[in-house]
Amino acid sequence: MINRRHIRVKVMQSVYALLQSHNDDIIKEEKFVKHSILKTYELYVLNLLLLVEVQKLAAKKIALSKKKILATKEELVPNTKFIDNKLINTLAESISIEGFVEINNLTNWNEDKEYVRIIFEELLESKLYKDYLQNSEDSFKIDKAFVIDFFKEIIAPNEKLAEHYEDTLISWADDIPFVNTWVVKTLSKHKKDTIFTLGKLYKDKDDEDFVSKLFQKTVLKQAIYEKDITEKTPNWETDRIADIDMILIKMALTEFLNFPSIPTRVTINEYIEISKDYSTDKSSYFINGVLDKISKEFIQSKRIVKIGRGLL
Image 1: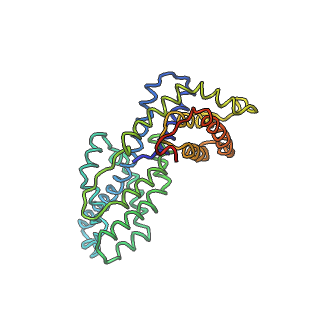
Image 2: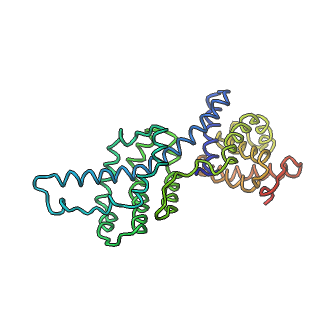
């Protein structure tokens, strides 16, 4: 499932896009951020499907080799350990994945078979694959460990595949690291003799509502927040503050004032970490200083009111 960190990144990107385009259609942009999150889920499913497609290609190669007129003994009696892999077969048989693919018309690997071949060929040449085939133990544990390593060592770091994803959808460039981690966690958690079911996109309704509320409040109140920021940065002209820094600070203020269950320190830490990936080298120090100063004043003036977990 998508986490709050990645939701914040998606909202940040949409706020930036809206402000840069001077567009005032908030409803349209809110739909876009939710669509972008759904596309992240699509990338997650495509990565799981890639495992299945590589296995299908392996099965096809074995079937063709058997039909050779001068087939070798090895080709006539091939090692089928990979095409019998229990975890990948579970993915291939998943009604949950099949339903998502059908509803969302995911035909990527039918149209872009070249990347399935690239991954398959790299797998064939790997020590990982050779060791797996030579392992005489037939168990779900061995199959699962191999699939996780296959994804981590061959699929996740493949540059051509990453470029293909970025060319398909530009926002996937930022999603790839998060999705790779998501896939590994999913594979690691799957248990023997259980049906594979895709997890939920959002943890709960609160996380889904978090998207809309964070985006709407940040955009609608940005002028007010900018005044608060200006007052706390007297030595900085507004146009000297990096656009992303300004957006991250405004988003943090939205959380301070509109999400009573999120601790102030959690909010500050989240935006400091995001700034390290998306803004300048010194942004994290600047954002920390501004937010720390504003949060203390807001708490003192009782503009920030936290309850429950937010008090921690």
